[in-house]
Image (tube, rainbow, N blue to C red; front, side, top):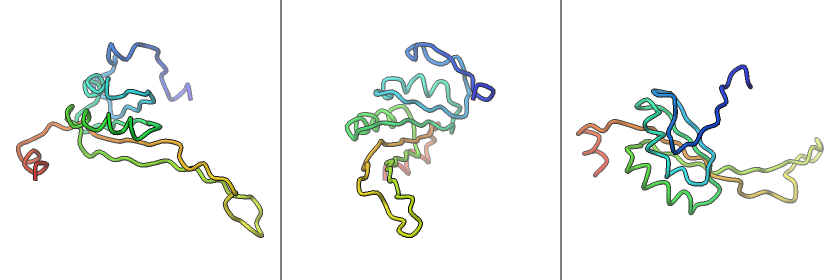
Length: 121
């Protein structure tokens, strides 16, 4: 991936070097602590995503997303289910990993009066 991705090592507390980027994905345990930096890096309407393993972390993140002006919030749970590779009796394996994490997606917006009125209803 080195021909398509620029890898950098820095402290997220200092923010991102890049500005007006289209998307940003985080895999850290406390993304709510860095939403100010995320918002400063993303273009309005850009895509933010993160992965979290627990609903407790989701509960912490959601109010901060709203507070920082993110909208169009979506959450999906990742499930992993293996199948037995036997054509005559294709079926799931006897054991299932029932949960592997949650994906969260949101977009920073610049609220207008119309959007604020819509969201308060």
